[in-house]
Length: 88
View 1 (tube, helix red, strand yellow):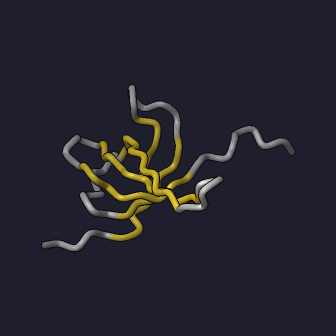
View 2 (cartoon, rainbow, N blue to C red):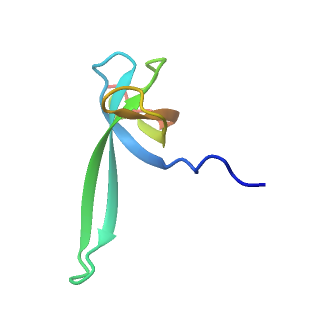
């Protein structure tokens, strides 16, 4: 049987903004070694993520998955909240 849908990309990141209704900004950080100089490089990317129940908040660690375009910049959705931020 042929798989009809491609496997969706999944990333783990931290919520950095929860000011919008049903939308979060999540930063995903990746580390890789420079091909020539072998120094470890840190790269960050921001994703606009759909959170329909407004469950996640700043500082939470979340798992996000790629989905169909939901708005101009929103193409990811929250799968689950892995770790809650500490309340101050």
